[in-house]
Amino acid sequence: MKALRHWSVRHAGGLRRVYEAFRRYAPSFDGVVRLMGRERSEKLFLPLERVAKGLFFDCQMCGQCALSSTGMACPENCGKEMRNGPCGGVRPDEGCEVMPEMRCVWLEVAEGRKRMADEAPAESLLLPPVDQRYRGRSTWLQIVASENGLPVVEQRAALRALERPKYGFERACESGRFLVTVEITPPDSPDCTDLLKRAAYFRGLVDAMNITDGAGANCHLSSVAGAAVLTANGHTAVCQMTCRDRNRLAVQGDLLGAAALGVRNFLCLTGDDIRNGDHPGAKAVFDLDAVSLLGIARGLRDEGRFASGRKLDAAPNLFLGAAANPFMPPYADRVVNLEKKINAGAQFIQTQFCFDPGLLENFMREVRARGLHERCRILVGVGALRSAKGLRWMAQHVPGVHVPEKVIQRVANAQDQALEGKKILLETIAALRGIEGVAGMHLMGYKNEDMLADAIAESGLRTRVA
Image (cartoon, rainbow, N blue to C red; front, side, top):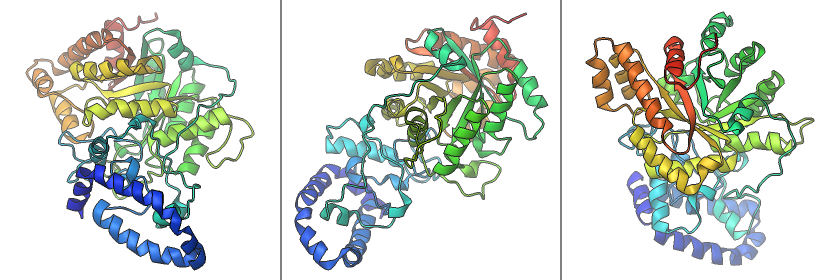
């Protein structure tokens, strides 16, 4: 079955022509369907469709087929059920983060689309979340019956944003100054004393502090609560929001709940593979991907409506961001995925750890060619660990993080490994600041706040307030 799936991708151009012919002539059988009735027709079409599409495409029968838009590769085979591009955890050997033995489905999508010579730019194809009511239904019958109620591809029109005031981090992003943000892990406790102590290192040094949302699929205090605590204590927080643990009802409730507590900034993420964390037996949700989450959050804010279409009594004031990973394959499609996120509503971007400025320069060259750096603020992720052992562990066990061997060896050979790690961080910041389109730095390092704060000051990104 997998061999035929790969064959289908390799012959995507011919299969696309077959599909177009079917779509052209199938509605002529609508009269037969009406005569037989919908239920009887479904019983006839469905077994044939399931066998044929399962054999050739490893199709999962979501009932909203997008094969003609995804290079004849079914996106439902993605380990995280991503419908709008690869996650940030694609492995260096092109393996899936969740199923390492399987090649990333979105690499196959890219190959298939090239063979189709598709005129529609990939970044314009925003697939809506799967409507579970139609899972297991026949899409062939939808084509025969000329049913247009189930869009294959959502072309999101420009929204007329509701008037709203702008605060804190959003105003900093619009100011044009070089930005600095930092990532903080919430505590394993309802007592936030330690969280506030760690946040205090960065007072006056950063524009905002990210509160992670189950990073690495490990459980901590909720990101909504952590961001609300920081906000209540005078800090500017960015609340990370992942799709791994929430369906579309829960994520909208959490967005509104966080906004009610004064949180305005959100980083929309798909989330890490749950089997890498401390609850590997839990069930991942992945009802949405990051692109869909951005679209839903934008709809809450700009249209004042839930994803269902129901009107809100008051729209939340949200400033939306997303992540990008220029350091893992598929390199060429990372910019396409970035553009999808910007089209969906991302106003700022924070990248994965950068230990290789050369890869970032290649990425930014294409970003500038598309003018994406003018449509959002791009902050590059940087950081340091205190030992070569920690760096090697991260490179081997954290999907999506690329650490060149020469960096690990340089730290390993140093007499003071923590100091050498900080030197590399300072050199990286200096190199990245010279790349056109880079709007800021996003610093990361698990419970390494003191060193990160020193690096911000020593690099000249900010001056300590006495």
